[in-house]
Length: 243
Image 1 (cartoon, one colour):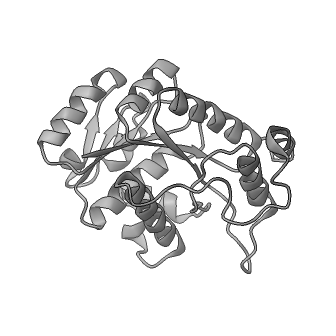
Image 2 (spheres, helix red, strand yellow):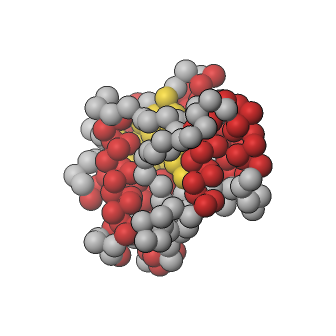
Image 3 (cartoon, one colour):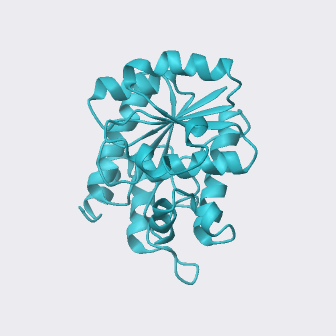
């Protein structure tokens, strides 16, 4: 069994949105996946409680119960356990990181979100786990061109040498439409842009969990300023919106 922890040290980044959609995407692709809601806010429970199979896909838990839960899931033949982690305190976040094979730090392309993601990555690295930053709620590309804010976020992550997923999730109304129906974006519009993004992100994460893929460092395009180092990261972060 593989365990994936989905993290965000800042509210509003879309941590639960990512966790729920990855869980349901995995199940749609034939992977026996379950979601552990370890966040006291219980947002994942609120979304999924209306599903007929809620009892088999969702576990309400806490940081202290994660280790025995992973053991129980493994015995039950679960292939993938996804943990929607608490935002705080750090000790509870650390419990989720400790049991995870891979940790996703979810962040929007803003200064405060990326600063929080850096803190998440520090926890992941301190505990010796693999981590990956997922940019979420990004403005959609237009005519094949990325919005400036998204480019700056990728550049800041590149300068700081932080691992970043090659797939960014975009800000789309369909996510809220799906949650209102206790469904994923794949179940609302299987051929839509959001579904394709989630499907691609899950594929990358699943391959990495199975040791078939390694995360790239920084954005999936060349930078003209690769030698700026951490000072460049700080300057790039300062150019991002603060919301």
